[in-house]
Image (cartoon, rainbow, N blue to C red):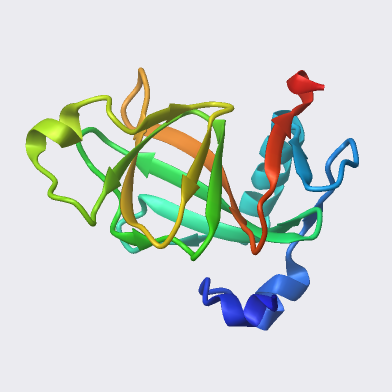
Length: 168
């Protein structure tokens, strides 16, 4: 799979400059996530201006590689009850919540105010969500408003297992 053919909105130059995250333990077919290392990497990418932000400022993305997989940081900043604009996920996308609480609103089903206010489709730090060709909007949930969430999106062409350093 070439990153150019994936249609994720990043240029070839973006991928050439993307940082590389290496799992702390090498296991075939497994990505080991170190939340502290990824958070630090996201902070550095933010400082370097690598994040591309939506016009409303609620959603920003920055490319990276996780082991040999193309990936991206998703930074979600919303004020309740605000959601990000529609985001079309890739063909095979795995989201790992790195920090915060994330609510997904599935835009390919009927949404209403009640479902948007519920805690359905809410994910916490360390949880993994499989998405395949789904249009979603996202909301960061927290004790303070606006809330922020950091997620890691793995764009995969094969099945991978996600483990944390705590699972080892």
